[in-house]
Amino acid sequence: MLKKIRLTLAIIFWVLITWLLVDFTGTAHAYLGWMAKIQFIPALLALNIGALLFVVTLTLLMGRIYCSVICPLGVMQDAIAWLRRKKNKYSYSPAKTTLRYTVLVVSCAALALGVAWIGGLIFPYSTYGRIVSVCVAPLYKLANNGLAMLSEHYGSYAFYEVDVWVKSITTLVVALLTWAVIAVLAWKGGRTWCNTICPVGTLLGLISRNSYLKMTIDADKCKNCHKCERNCKAACIDLDTHTIDHSRCVVCGNCEGQCKFDALHFTALSREEAAPSPQSIPLSEGKGEATSRRAMLTGVALLAGTALAKAQSKVEPKTTDGGLADIVKKEKPKRDKLIAPPGSLSIRNLRAHCTACQLCIDACPNDVLRPSSSLDRFMQPEVSFERGYCRPECTRCSEVCPTSAIQPITKEERTAIQVGHAVWTHDLCIPVKDEKPCGLCARKCPASAIQMVPLQAGVHQDGWRWRDADNNEIPREKVLLIPVVNEEKCIGCGACENLCPANPISAIHVEGHEVHREI
Image 1 (tube, rainbow, N blue to C red):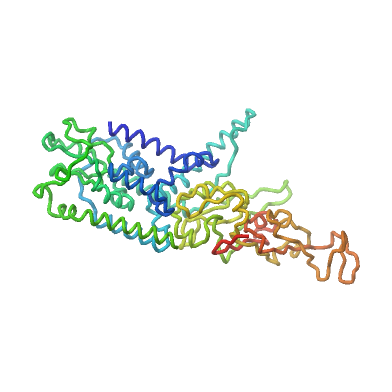
Image 2 (cartoon, rainbow, N blue to C red):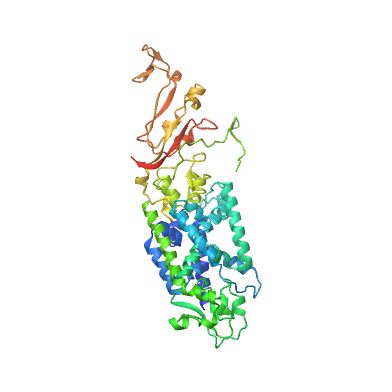
């Protein structure tokens, strides 16, 4: 019964979280956003005390059930292991304690030092989010586009097409390599990644040593058939001593389902029953049990200190314009200051809290966010305007971020946040370079932060007429106007940069603010 209940809940959680990660309409986030926020690391970085208490309480009550039901990366490993239809494929192996604690300490140090992306390479939710967003979401969008074409053929617009493109080759490679490593480990050893590499698994394992309910072996009923041990994907059942390493047990229920002698039960134990006799365990293991409480408190203290520190602190083919001229693809300008998404407060705050799960990047409807290639915030989101601009009414990235790296903002607050300001480049502007009128940047600026002024010296406007320095009237078509940016009004949305007809580099681009400002 335990296995059936756990398996049913795990499948439901896994399917819904995967839908949450691939959904581009915002529908899933309205109903399922809480599923991302109860993930342990996002809850820690967002200082979501309620979610943290829920996970810790659940672990103290039932052991590492979180890893079997709520964590999508753990359920993915179970699915891969299940595909290998080989019975009795596992065996007991001692815990790699030194490696586990080393990874945990390094991960905590990365968070405390404000380089969360380093830990994000192995944190379970960010790892799974990156794999799904980069590898699965494009397939989901392609299927949606196929349905959109089909429905349009029959006169229905229930679906709409979306762009599908590779936003970062580096992130794609990292996601594929990570998936390959986890898949191989899961295929061969079940929960090897969870019980060796994952820092969340290590911390919850320390807590689960003291859980109220545990999987236990009744030595009097056990016939030493070893079926439970050979079907334990956590490799934590040592039938020679009739003991279970509860720091690695993920309460999957496989062992209980395999036992024909009713020797395994998920039940509460008294302190005397829970502690094996000294003669039944090796000396080294006994020492580990004796220091388990101290190790658990150390792990909790590390993450608590980290939380307090956080509180302080594709080449596309050319197309043609009406068959007359080639349209040259926009190139990314060189910026002195990178642009962080609205709601992230500052580049430093984003770097310290973002685990590079790619959720905001995949959810961006304007194709503005993409993974950074900078080593100080690798794969974290940055803003670029080659394919669109950050519409002032859009707050999608702030709605989906589970770590508060991008904090929730309203549409009214978005229009007042200055993530950067526009900078005009004289030599690239069409009125200067080609001596042709333009002014598109001023007409399209949603903040009315750009005004057009005469390029020629002394030219001024007299009512509806233009006059030169000698007050002679000049034909309107001969007056060349250039943009002037009011930095006090500019919000750095990038509409001017995206819509500027100068190619391949826009004559006006946005420079980011290290700390966001408000109008």
